[in-house]
Length: 217
Image (cartoon, helix red, strand yellow):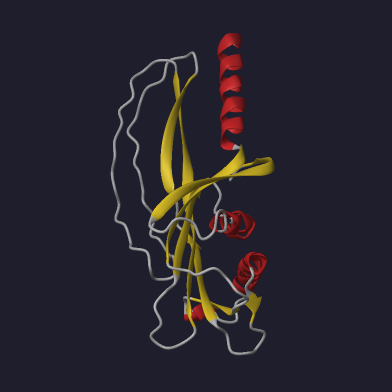
């Protein structure tokens, strides 16, 4: 019995450590025909008009503006802008994953279900229906645990500031992890967006950002 208890305790500790990571992984997809910056004045606006006046949006816009400033763009500050930068962001309702661990004692298996939650990425992500997936476990010495992973997204377009202008840049950052705390995650999503900016058009690159300490992201 003592051996069983020790094994269960060890599995719990390992499970907790596995939940934390010292890096954050994202994919960045870009399409662009963006010329080299030459001091163009920019204004940053939300893709979703309902976010106008949002303090959360203003916070994220400042993060993006700081990165664009490092590249040579300038804030319009009320003057006519040369370029319009459009932002959108969101996090879904999460997807349930199931993982089994060896425990050293018998376990009767049971079926589990996956659920794809309804996305709410400000009108440009589709809704998903229920999906049922099954697994009947009958192994001895297994402990089954479930956890939720969320998909976090940041999207940015850049276009000239006139009616009917086509986009010069379209970028999308997508990251999956156990946290849906978007304010805490946004600095890393913005950092990923500007990794090797503007990137090779028509490609998706993987970006790994090291964290100062282990986080359950």
